[in-house]
Length: 139
Length: 139
DNA sequence: TCCTACATTGGACAATGTCTAAGTCAAGAA
DNA sequence: TTCTTGACTTAGACATTGTCCAATGTAGGA
Image 1 (tube, chains in turn purple, blue, green, cyan):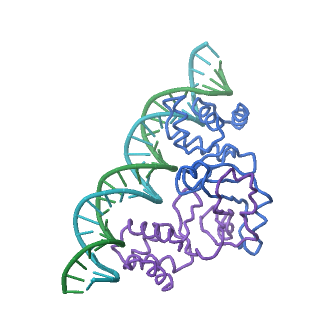
Image 2 (cartoon, chains in turn purple, green, cyan, blue):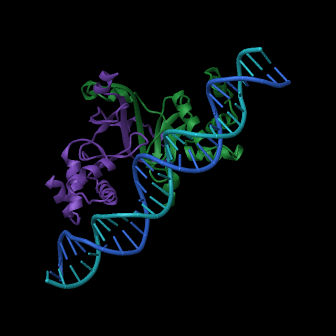
Image 3 (tube, protein in one colour):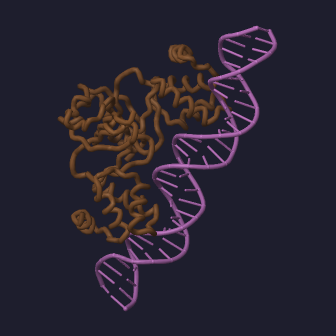
């Protein structure tokens, strides 16, 4: 984690208690929290941190490329700290938890040129959906 | 379109003016509207139609499998009437418009078994992102 | 230590979606 | 055709998620 903080400082980030806490929350577990969950966990360590700051910080981390924004359903976005490994997501349709997965081949190559309609295509996300073992056992 | 209405009636749908209008809006152009856009267009033909009804009807069409719900960014969901053809989406990162695209091969096969972690994987969505020609010209 | 530009705060606001109670109506029954 | 009834619609309150702003605080360089 200090890696991350060092990288950020190197890019001119001013290092505040709030930003440190947000970064620590993201780095802690390898889960994909929503902004509100990040706020809740950050509040445990720094009770006066505001929602706005969490949103700001997450937004900055995303635009710096340190964190990926994942919106799988129409609900809250989730934040994925695993930005430095190329990966995709496997989502449980019932409980919403997300796992990182790694694919064979490059999904970009599956889109033929004539199907690009003049777009400058720069990114592809693949999301698998299913029922996780835990939910599957419950039903 | 009467196809769609017939199918729905066959499944016990009560056919109301509101539902007819929503179905017509979706079927009209081959665009992917948000719920609010559907409401706006439906209102042109049936001014007193309410937001709640549009949301209800869209939800029903989705659960009947007649329409696909697409949530590409964290913003409003869009509704895709092209549910009977297997396809994926190409989204403009700037203006949010969506095109249907067709892929080479089956993206499901790109996910190796050991990467499925016991999930019963049933669905995969692939979303390409880029800048559309129109937005590209504007910048 | 002091400055100052940048960061944080709290609360208002916006966008999207859900829910409910009361009224309305489509379609089968008589 | 008219009646009846349960499904449908409505308006608006409410919930969730996210953005914005003016006032205040502070990290880090001079």
